[in-house]
Image 1 (tube, rainbow, N blue to C red):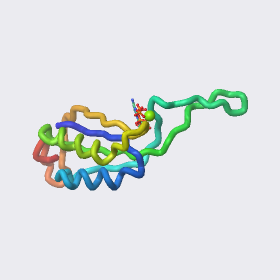
Image 2: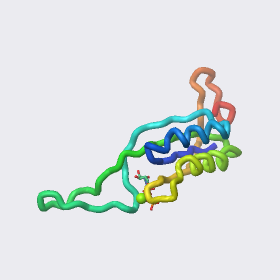
Image 3: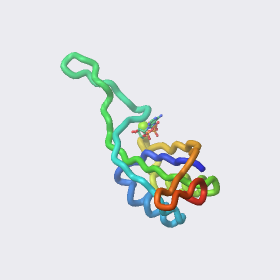
Image 4: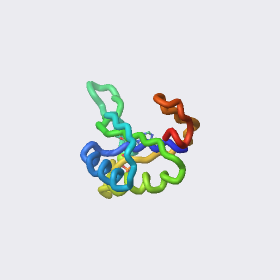
Length: 111
Ligand SMILES: Nc1ncnc2c1ncn2[C@@H]1O[C@H](COP(=O)(O)OP(=O)(O)OP(=O)(O)O)[C@@H](O)[C@H]1O
Ligand SMILES: [Mg+2]
């Protein structure tokens, strides 16, 4: 099992969501976050060097079984990509366990 975490532009959320549904990926968590990538710039404010500005982004989390990783990544890329800086990133991490609270099922069948 893998946890796929994607940071995308706010304006691309609907398109990413559509692409995921088209690929039969129907479980998702979405949150509002802020951050910056490699284009960070320190700013001088009242003579002090301040942290680079943080830009609002959307974080998507999707836990999947291994055979769903590639299609999930593909759907996110096709919905989120605009071919310009700031399009976002996808992180894929190993997921040790998943437990459906209602049934106490564990592992792949709980995903
Ligand atoms: N290494 C990272 N660790 C944690 N969050 C990151 C990382 N890289 C990017 N992010 C998050 O993803 C968002 C979008 O990143 P972004 O697409 O600007 O990455 P980038 O490396 O600057 O690539 P690009 O040059 O295409 O802009 C950032 O605002 C930040 O929230
Ligand atoms: Mg960037």
